[in-house]
Image (cartoon, rainbow, N blue to C red; front, side, top):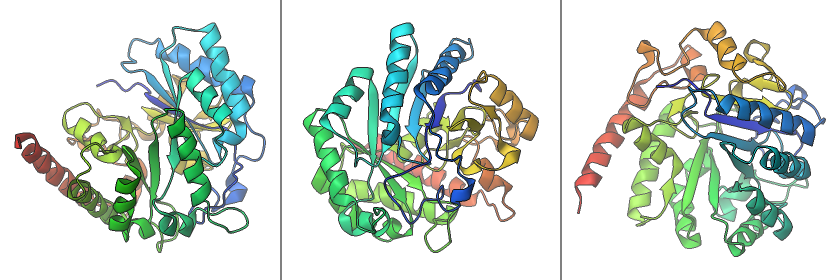
Length: 354
């Protein structure tokens, strides 16, 4: 298995038009990179470096570029669009794929048309029906954002853009999964990715055992509601891993930790192995204008091979677990192992069904 970088997140700014009460980026706003958003030229430098890295022989997949945020990426849309357009113009044969996670409030018909033109696939942050979503995802005036997000989703659908939903799996959603799935079924969504809520107070965070219990319940509810066309990104990630084709990115929403080796994040001008490590000097891998190959080398100098899939002590059918979790004194691999065993057996049964 190659240890090549296969996913790069770009947090282009640290400003947001929402004030979600569970946002771990803004839990310590003094630790954020500051208001100086990446310029189109700086984003272009990053994309050029990623393209050059993609030509290396060990890179066996098209590299996914995901514009995300410690802020809302659409607040920097002009810079993002300009940089991607420039890459298409100068390097039409590149092997990069573009995605964005947005809260959906700033989506317009013009922006959606521009996304289609540059080949960027958006996903929208949505925590289910208004009763769940507006519990946490509020505007700066304290009002809920659900109605505005649904308007953005309607615009995407009207333009023929497939809509993927990113749901923050916090305690409130975990406690109301049936209500959540009823909404998903009513709305006819076809792809959902759950992002485990971490690094926040325990009353809203989801522990490792809770997370894997929730994934079991999610798989059961998908079946109970007859949602055969619905893809749960987390479950698909485990299915691919069990089949020997893991996406080596993050266990918060996937199956396999690839922090620093297969997955990196640009927090504006600084580079980290993952978003949970931002602001910690120990984990800073470098600056935005450096060649990508330097970052896995520096990660290896920090942790040896313990973060990568080739480490024998971390081998499992789904690859290594989250590096941050493994460093915790109370870490246990048992909930993950139990889920993988349960999901493997469930998948075998499903394959045998007519």
